[in-house]
Figure 1 (cartoon, one colour):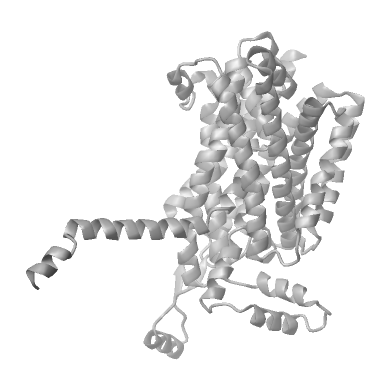
Figure 2: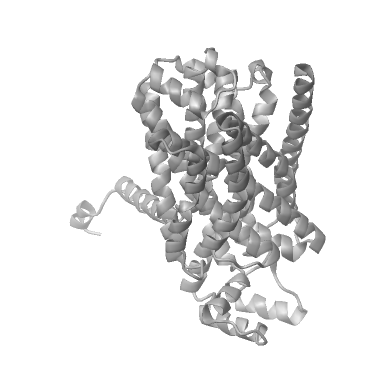
Length: 510
């Protein structure tokens, strides 16, 4: 090589920097393709139920229960990672896996539990949205409860047959992302108005302490856990990963929509199906290839973890910090609700702060309502193969949740609505062990979490001659299995402890 060439060629250090830059850019661009599902799932962890429980936690225990929010977020990330693993490896969401692998009676039992969880979630969204409308534009509570069904119109307009379409999925992801961003901006503004609090005092709340057990803290912790690790999010998380897997397999020639239509025609020849219905049937039978699994699994889990550890943890912590800074130690702390914290924020900080808090609540309620619709659709189609357009599904679910909310708002009013909101989160916590058990079982079972190993032509010929197939075991290793069982046991014990403590406190009052 000549001296001129040596001088013009980059040095090894520069080449290394260029390689790292190209590699980083490639990883970042690939990661951006997976941004979306984590935002959709994160909405389940910042709905009106979270507001109520976090306000209660801050009012009674100040910052001590920040540890419970952090722990709940970690548990949520772990369980959602199992959901992503199940959906990626098997191509099935949690509901369809229950119908395929569990006895019929157990599948129906879990379906009832899942529907109860969705209705409890919807009750929280109805109440939260109604309270926000009542405060922001002075709509009477009963009218606000009735108006909350308006988000059905959004789902009705947006919905297109064949939800496996990436265009449909990304449309909803962008809409929900805009609402989540709006919620975060609202809380950034509110935190800026708070009086100066020692940072050490706040961060101390993220560590366990004896203060957590004071003032009925375990019961509140159970409701925080139920509001954070929401059962319907498990079905949502396991059902959002398939479209990107499908897109990858289509682009790489591993899956054909045309072939899926032909298969659906053969399987359902006795049934008069439309092309869209055949396409959906083929999509439901889709199983990701090993290359698609390797492509998607790591990035899907990374995107979810980053999103939940930023947006969801920030919003839940911000609610508790605002409540703890303004409500704790004040006469209003006893029986604190959303009305109380709005009045206190408006009086002690600025009227705009209380208004922004309610605006964030309204945005959360609407985004959570949309996401709950999708989760409900996954549950009904997966468990019992009941196909219903999301807007019809939304009306059915909302009607069930609106009736008790209307009755309460008309007969008792504001105090009972607040107690109903908190009780709905405890119901979610009680249902959580029943709905996490099948998720842990499926991801630990080797016969379910098996994927065919891609082999070279020589290896494939050898396998065929021996009558064997090369497979990869994607089930949980023993460490993950132990952690999963420990999480399930912790949730169950916390629920039992909370129920006992609640019974004892009621007995003391009487």
